[in-house]
Image (cartoon, rainbow, N blue to C red):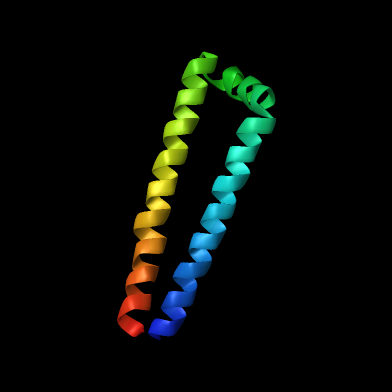
Length: 81
């Protein structure tokens, strides 16, 4: 695989993953009660537990984007010039 292709793949993976993270964030902000109602049918959660779970999951997802998409992309940009 060509390094230029790998660089482009990592960039687009980062863009798509940030799009998913933004969609998730907006969904939780603007449709919080609806999403909570759906989840509370499946699981016994308080609103505070629900918010905590989503906040932590979004943070872990964001760290994953940094570690697996953006850092390798930046390293390739530095190495390839």
